[in-house]
Amino acid sequence: MTTKELVTQIRKKKSFLCIGLDVDLTKIPPHLLQEEYPIFAFNKAIIDATHHLCVAYKPNTAFYEAYGLKGWKSLEKTIQYINKNHPEIFTIADAKRGDIGNTSTMYAKAFFEDLAFDSVTVAPYMGKDSIEPFLAFDDKHTILLALTSNEGAFDFQTQKINKKEVYKHVIETSTTWKNAHNLMYVVGATKAEYLAEIRTIIPDSFLLVPGVGAQGGNLQDVCKYGMNKQIGLLINSSRGIIYASKDKNFAEAAAKKAKELQLEMETILNA
Image 1 (cartoon, one colour):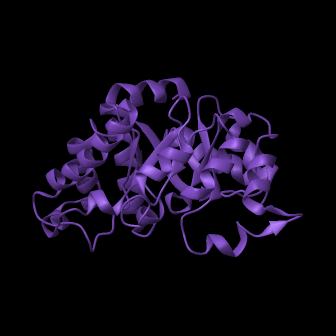
Image 2 (spheres, rainbow, N blue to C red):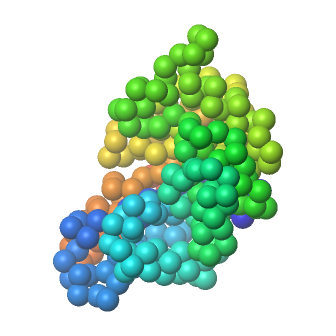
């Protein structure tokens, strides 16, 4: 999917919502555990109820890998269902990969070719040759971890080298890499005050922003400091939407929570 196509969907749906499909079998409605693939059954119901309210889905692969072969099969079935029934939806494999060049090439093939995701999250610690293999794929996006929403982000990301924070070094350096136009960046909603400075470095890039909802991030602040002329934001909410209810009406409850966020986004877009 091209960036232009993503922006078209945002304007059409009046939403820049990304829903995280982070499925924990201990938290889903008990009746689904009787299914052959309970994770997929849960995801399908969520997707059916919310696809018109969001522009992206983001499965975190850890929640699938943890359940072995059936978990990975559930991930495969989920992405195939989205691509077949809602091809306009932008898909994100939240895998946080990144390794030496030949290994990164294989990771990229796994997510971009085999599973046919539109994008994958990648850790920048190993530098250019660990990221450029992902960037080599046309109309696929590599989402670089820049400034994350967790408490441990302060351990390294905000430390200064030559009077400049590490996350700024990462972002600035990444813009020099081959096919850097295929980059997007993760910036946590709990770090909204940093967004204005980040926008001076990458004014036109899309930002994937986790942390709104359960982690306490504020949508208004994120938009105030992070939105650009093409919106440039994908706001992720996972637990706050998908676990809105553990009853049989869980999908309807998830849709209600998603609708609340979508309406807030529509108000911001119309302002």
